[in-house]
Length: 423
Ligand SMILES: Cc1cc2nc3c(=O)[nH]c(=O)nc-3n(C[C@H](O)[C@H](O)[C@H](O)COP(=O)(O)O)c2cc1C
Image (tube, rainbow, N blue to C red):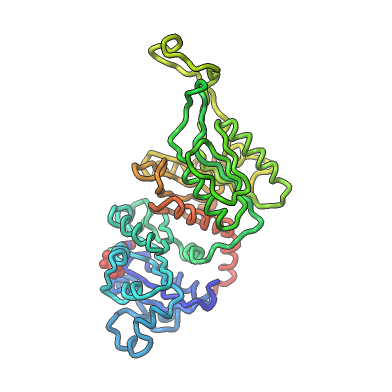
């Protein structure tokens, strides 16, 4: 896929610049033509000579470079590139790009080019989570810039959180166009469930169904068969689904999911199960068949006797026979990042999932909102570190998640490919 691609690899001043030498080596190995451009600060972290040796080409560092201008020139260099990849992309670089500033060669090239731009941000977690950086990233995303990562975890500064540059192999995966896997079928649950108290009242939650519907919509647009089983929502069902089934209660969702999975069993397809629905953990034990009257039946203190609902996700992901090939859960947490991550890791293991997507409830993301920001954890954590997807519209998050799902499904194959190409 990268063979003969002309890649302009930008390096900015961050501690992760040491990983860019490996990234550069892998790109060259994959058959790409790589031209490195470094900022002034980047050269304090790693020398141009390293990249010159890896690419067999001079590294460019300045706009006012007589040698560059006597040859290709900065405009030609921007036109030459099939795409620009900046890794690491510092907070400073992200801010300059968001504001259209061009103080150096790399930022100038980004303003001149009409080719796609990919950024692999790398910075301290506070810097990454700062409103200014998040606004800059959101601005770049709306302009079509693709953001790879960052990862979540231990940082060089000793802190923990989102901001690590993705590993070189993960960045390369992020550059690949999504492969179409015709042998797959996606089964997605979305929205809330409603558990009746009486014919007019129910227990439910604030799930809008927007995230699950966005995933179903993007997958169907990409040509994948999708079965969507959803609770009561006020959204239009996406076009071109294989089926969309509306249910009300958790019990109905459980039955519907298992009926759909059973119907797919002999189709010889890879089944990907994505549980986005916010399923009620409990239901009222004996809902009243008639509306409960305030004056007669309701005392000043009302106690509802509840019993557990079936765990739809666990019942699918823990199946001994007929388990889908890949199971994904969502976890909504109100705790701070490290506790939320610990909880998500526990759920990933306990429910035998392949991937878990952590939502941290904030005023303007997750429930009912059009935007989301998530952290993705993988079963194969040794292979892939958690990845943080910063605030973006849910369809944008859905596209990024779909890429990560395919990457993870292919991760073993990819690692073997790289292992074979080691020198
Ligand atoms: C030791 C050290 C490590 C740094 N690491 C990072 C980093 O990982 N990410 C970042 O955005 N800035 C980092 N900085 C700050 C940048 O180097 C600084 O903002 C610089 O102006 C970036 O310039 P550039 O974007 O033009 O390359 C670091 C600074 C020092 C001294």
